[in-house]
Length: 291
Length: 291
Image (tube, rainbow over all chains, first blue to last red; front, side):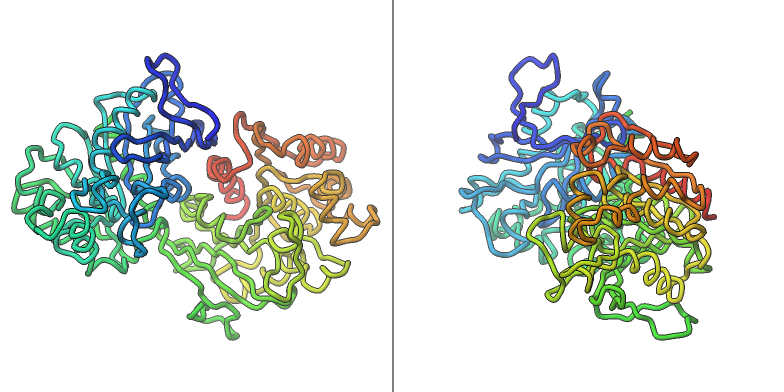
C-alpha cells in the first residue's frame, strides 16, 4: 500500500493506492486499495489489466466472490488472467464485504465480514457499513471508469456462490448497465434457502417481502431486460440441494421467458478447482458481448 | 485423510490415503498422504490425474516447489491442470521437506522444514530426516508407479527456485531416469550463492567440495546425458542477481556443450503469477518428450 496508482491522463487525483502488482500473462495483476464512501472503510480490489490496456481502454468484467473470500481467492486460484489477456478484458474483483475494527461482524462465517451478500442493509448494526450493492453497482464502476483504462459502456458481471447471487441480482436490477452476466454455483433464491434467510433476515429485517428485491428468482419475473444468463453448477457440490437449488431459477426463467443456459457439470464440487475448469467458457461468454 | 487410495489391480496394499480430491479439467486434483521410509515422516503429495488416467497409464511429470511451500502452493496457483489434462500427463508435486514434531527445524524460512533443498543431508541434526533427494528420485517414483496409473518409463521433472535447483540436479545426477527437464527461476549454483551456501553448509557440512555434487553448474560439466534444459526467468525477479544468477548455468552449459534454452521474461517476478504465465510452454516442452 505504498504507491498511488492512476492511469496517465485521468483528470482527478487517484483514489487508489497499489498494494501489489505482478506481471501476469503479459498484463498486470494488481491489488489496489481505496477509501469507500458507500462502505465507510478501506477496500481491497483485485484488478487485472490485460496487455491491451497499455494502449487503449478495455471492457471491464466484474467478479463477485463467495462467503469467506477476500479478493485473494479469485486472483490467485481462478486462472482468469490467461483468458482476460487473450480477450483484452479488465477484470475487477473486490473484497466481499466492508472490513475493519469499526465494522459490525458476527462470529459465524456466513454473516458479517466476508459475507456482505451484495445488498444494502437497512437494519442495525449492519446498515452503517454493509452497502455492498451500492458499492459494486455504483461507486466502484465510477472509480474504475474514471481512474483505470476502462471503457465506461462495456461492463459484464459474474461471480461464485454468494457472488453468483450478487451478479445475477445486479444484472437483473439494473437493465442496461451490464452487457453480459454469468455465475458459478450461484445462490439463486436467497429468500428461500438457509444461507439467504439468515443473511437477508439480519441485513433487511423480518419482512420477507423486502427480501424479494434481492432474489434472482423473484427479480427475473419482472426483468426489464432479457440478458442471457450462463450458469455452471457442479452436481457433486455439497451445497447443491440445500443452498443453491438452481432448478428454482430454471423454473422462474422458463415462466418469464428469460434466456438461461444452466449446465450441470458431473463430478464437480463447489471449489475454485471447479471455477478454474470452466473459466475459459465464462470469459468467452462475456467477451462475445463486451468486445 | 480418511480414505485409502489405490489404482484397481495394483498388487500390494496402497501406501496412500486420500486427504482431498477435487474434479478439475475433467480429471482429479488429489492430495495423497503416505509414510515415507526415506524421510521417516508422513508426507503430503499433490497428484493431478488427467482424464486419460481413467482408461490407461500416463507419463508422470514431477514438480518441485520452492522455499516455504507445501504441496498446496503449486496445486492451487500454478494452473497446471488445464495443460496436463490436454496432454494426458499425471503431475506429482510433493511437499518441500520432511515435517512434523520429531523433525529438526530452524526458525529461518530458508533452512529446515519447508527448505529441504532436495539433498541427502549428512550432518546432525538434519541427516535423520532430510533425505529429499532419495525421496524424490527413488521412493516417490516407486510408489507412484506401483500404485497410480503411471507409466514407469516416462518421467519428466520441473520446479521453481529451490525446486528448480532440485529438478536440474536430479536430472543431471540420474541419466536415463527423466525424459525431460525444465525450471522456473532456478537456483543454478547453490554452492556459490547465499541461500545455497547456508543450506548446503548446514545439511552437508563445511567441505565445499561435497557441495558440488548438488550444484547444477558443476554437474553439467560431466553429465553423461545431454537432456535439453528449458528455463524461464523473470528479469524483475528480486532474487535474480544475488541468489539465482542464471548466467552461471549458461556459461557452464556453453563450456560443456549442454543444450540450454534460457528465456529472460521482461517484467516478471518470482511469484506464481510468473509460473502460471509460462506453464503452458513448460508442459508442452515435457509433453513433446513424454507422450
